[in-house]
Image (cartoon, rainbow, N blue to C red; front, side, top):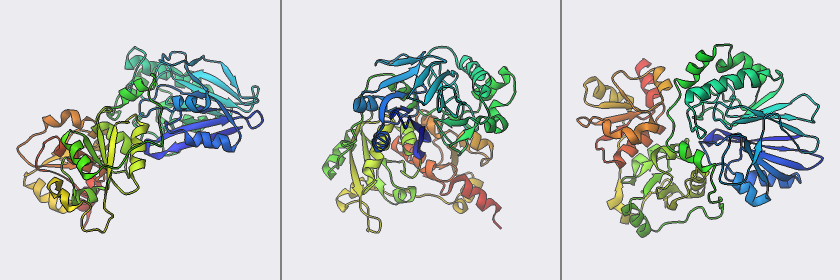
Length: 462
């Protein structure tokens, strides 16, 4: 048996290739939109990809099923409840897909969504199962939340009750030795307590996963419907895109360089300018109105919080980073990149040409030693943009709280009578938030270097 996992750190997303070494038949499960890795692996092993299965309509990325169909002519499989604009193979609970000796049994596992399925994999039909690909049903350390993108009717509570049955009547009935291979890991907004581990077993989850312990159904519903991180705005869009026909990803045509004149024209026309450099580089010199979403963080997901899928986007990048930035946007369906503008290499006197001086500004970031006086004397408004669970673990007394995914919608509720200092955990999200607020017309906005971690370290230092 061939069972390969492909993990994309920036989206906390796992996809899989399952193949039979003798028959050379294979399927891909939950693929990302840029499918070259699967095609290259199949070619290397002389496999024929004959099917692609999505465990559900993903909300946090655009699945690559149409790209695989375009490249291989494969069929597309979903759970029975799925409704799509393109032909699919509806997979029933208990159905078996054979790839020669390798056998895949379909398990209906609703709860995250109604159409959710899991795939139970065996070396051959009569063997003990080796692994279960659980999609967003059972994570390592958590279960899938029921409130992301319900495309099948019913309420979040009804989905949560379905998930309770999925966990206790289906997945936990599997042998302890069965490997658990989920579609997401730590950092994903699809759950709240996911582990950094990428592989586990049913037995380990039975012992260590707090969401699958023997509690009542009502207690389980309360557990999975409370305390979840805010849903990024693009999730509903991507879930819908994944059930519709859409443009196939074209890797060779991601973006092109903009001249200074073209950049000025795009800016004047209202394009969203996303600067992908680190927060310190951004603060030192950037285009007025640009939003800082550094490539070193959760770039695509965060861009989906601050821009709409149809917004024209201009990327400001260090040389060589433009294609990576455009690719990450394409993975969440953001194809409207108008072009990129490269900054000069680090070490030059300025990252932008002097002819653009009228468009450039510098912003000050405040450190904890400087901020403590401002806070003590009540001269600033503190804004915490972390998620609720982070804030519950500790926060700066008197700070306001708007999680970053909600800031675009709620920015007008912020008080205007004092300067605002934004903070997150370590200083990456706060640069996003502060630049977003400035792009929306807020004045006197800065952010805390090093975030809440630096604040705590300063407070406890001798």
